[in-house]
Structure formats: structure tokens, C-alpha cells
Image (tube, rainbow, N blue to C red; front, side, top):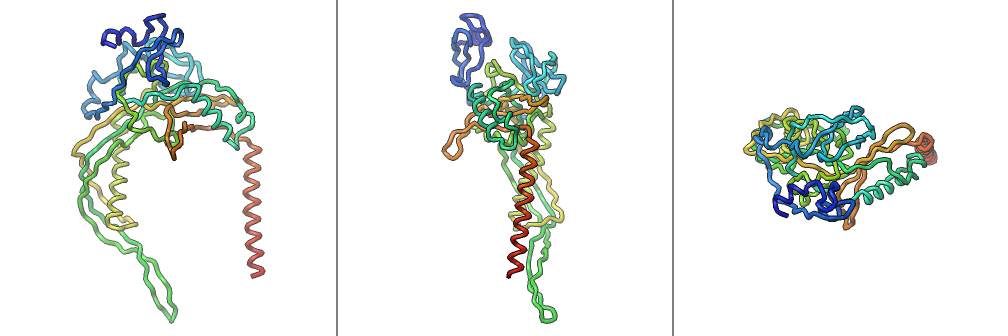
Length: 366
């Protein structure tokens, strides 16, 4: 496509005028009505961004192409294509969403496009439900999905080249044999020593979640999202999907990333000195260079209503290759059956009691 046709066809089908959507199977824009396809040229030349970019207005969302909605029930903020009108929140299923102008924020530079379609994601979710053994049978046997929406989740990634001067007092666990009054015992003690030095480290893609709509525990279960799938962000990937706007400012995310870097550096210092105890350790970390990316991860979100409660489940929008096997990872919450939980607790209690009884019996006959 030339530049002119890209602008004209970005959201509308040139054949029938319907809204185009991004198709995970082909990686192109497609018309759901007449099946016209617009080929997208994926740009995998992802570059790190200098911290000065955070304050440049040309790196903000384009209000002419996208708009933002906020759910007044759960507070989530989503960004979507201008032609799409939101009716329900993808995170709580609430119909109470309001249009807002809060788009004065950094625009993503990197994205992993969806490569799993909605039907495949639904199948993965239904299989996940069947494996929830402690969930009520009615939940495990649910064959439908109340609502599933493809959502791009915001992530900050940070790179850094650091020089760290350190000094402190570390310790190693030691043992010694002591004989007193003819009795020999082995004692454990800590051998303390002072340390001082300098370490240089390279950090690549320290990832920090940009919003609380999907917590870190569930994000970890959906990993990995391979760097080989990164590409340069385009609003065209948003067609038919929504993006969560970040609620954690990049400056605060960087402070969290720095804490993670310091933990890595401290661990390396401990290993270098063969130490396993810390009295104190002061780190003076200096950045020789630093950069960031604002990354969007593809995740399907469902708000499952069960007995008047909403349970979120999340399906990775990419296929993961692990142990020579392709899989689509699923995470989230499910309801618990009180009867099953009670029976499991009783079973554990009986098992512990039986084990104790057997140990007591074996000791009695010993």
C-alpha cells in the first residue's frame, strides 16, 4: 500500500465501508462483512527510546484516531479505535463506561500483535475451566463465555548500563568442632568480613506492568512473551481490539525497575564473595546509559459472572512453545466449591492424622 491508501483504508473497508479489524490468523486488516483484506507490513525494527521522549508531545496518542473510555464501576481505562464505541467494560462486564479526554499520555512504541483468534482463545479457556477441580461443577461445565475481549496490556521495559560502587559487611556460614568436658559437638557460626568494590552490569528488558487491571501473578502465568515477536506499534493493530491505558507513570515504573536491578547486583556481589549473610551493603548505582520501551501485550480478557460475582480469566494472545509443544496459556480466578474445599481439608487432616498414628505405632514397636 502507498501512504495515501494507508490513511484512507486504515479503519474503513474500501469495498463496503464497514469497519476493518485486525485478523490474528493472517496478520492483516480484514473486513468481517465482505472479507476484503488490507495487507499490513510488519516492522520488526524495534528501537529503545531515550528518557527525554517521555516529555515529547509528538509521542502522545493521536486523538484523531483513538479515544479513551473509563469504567465507573471498576475504574479501568481503555483506549480504542475512534470508530468503535464501547458498550461494556472488558474487566467487569459493566455497561457503565464513559467517554473521556484523558489521552495526554505516552503512546506505545512496541507491540506484540494478536496471533490467536477469539475462537481459539475461547477453546483454551473452556479447557482451563474443566481443570479447576475445586470449582463448582456448574462452573467447570459452562460451555459459553459471557464476554471475551482482546486487550493490549501496557508494560514498561527498561534497559540500563550501570556502574555500581559498593561497600559493606558480609558473612559466611562456618562450622567448627568443639570439645568440652570430653564431649565433642559441631557448632555453626558466621564469619564476618568487610567488602568493597565496583561492578558493571548490563540490563535488558526489565519488565514492569503499567496497569493493575491484570496483576503481576496472572501476568507471570501467561509468560513468556518472546522478544522475537516484538514489532513497531501501529494504530492498525488496535482495529477490533482495545488497549488498557497505563496507570503507573513511567517515572515510578523506572524506580521499581531500579530496585529490581539492585537486587540482581546484590545477589551477584554475594556470589562473588561467597557470602550468604548481610550485615549491611551500600550500593551507589550510576547509569552510564538507560532507555525504555512502552510495550503492549496481547491478552484476551473475560468477565465471567457466576452467582452474582465476576471472575476474570486471561488468555494469552500468542502461542507459546515449551518442551516442543505448542500451548496457549490461561490464568485467572474461578469460584470455589465449599463442599469440595471442605472434603479436601478433611482428607488432608485425616491423612496427617493417619501418618502420625503410623509413626507412633512404628516407634512403639521399635
